[in-house]
Length: 447
Image 1: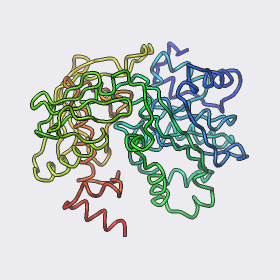
Image 2: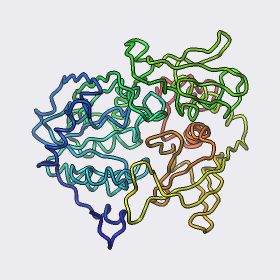
Image 3: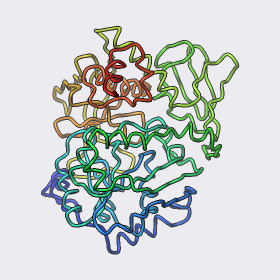
Image 4: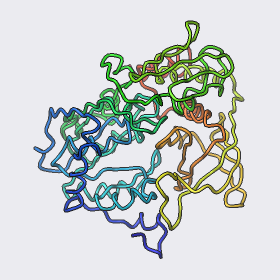
């Protein structure tokens, strides 16, 4: 129950988190194993190579974050060990999640910004001998593969110097992804191993720790299923909202012309397109169609072009009109509302940073953000909107054309890499930067 004297945010800041247990954790465990509700319906195979329940003291659990269902898989593979899971800050403003999160002692975390409050809560739990589960990527997979982990993760793990366990997930993205938010039941694999001992963390540098995590997380669910050939029940909805990420036509090269309809993805200008079946095969509509083999490869093609475009044009700028939303002050939001709309304006991404000019709550509102502090956008449950923490406040942006979200995401990331590059590209993606200054820097840094 949120106090009437405090805003939801103030109450959240003052919240004391304990190690989970009691009847609420028992109920959570029951639900996680209930057929046709949680765990079993996703057809999960669990493999425990290193048993975390043999650890007597505190520990971390990390995983490659593929879907919003991952918490179920993590819960089941490490049981009976109890743990405090870290979840996105804005989730605590939703009426269907806040009560449960409070009861099972979930820790709120603001994505992609320094969050002293979450570190304070995690420190308390670790000192009490508890276990913390968090996703170092800071987000679930946006287009089928993993993101680089958040800079500073290595220093964070070295500081606490406790065992780190890793849950490797496969198939979870294809089960529950961010374009069509329906569950597409197929199969999920979860494997538990011990990634770092305290001695490992002492011996390795922060950079070496992060490199090892990024390499262990390396995974593409689309490529994985090319080999596994698992059928997912997409109900002819595999392409729904996919044009938000696959925004550029690979044949005619025009942007924002891609459209989606059920299991079909096509360009409204030239007719280039495909259907997507229950194995997530991208099947060209005609022989002459030019189609990447997956959404991951589609985004890779778009990223390669943007990398070159922003280097060729020193005045490169991308703008779009959007509405803006904020989190509620006193009343929790209903299930399908990510924020309360409160204004509108123009969002711009250029070489100087990220900008907005418009109105908020009937007053002029603007900001100018630097790539030293911002390296990606917050994409939560779906790819039709995005968010940012600005002055410690969570703001949501609703573009009038949802197909610009994918471009905005890639553009912010690549502007950051061009001008700052603390959130580095994967070494195995260096081919995207062929012939650029960043390719040379990355080669020097890898020696």
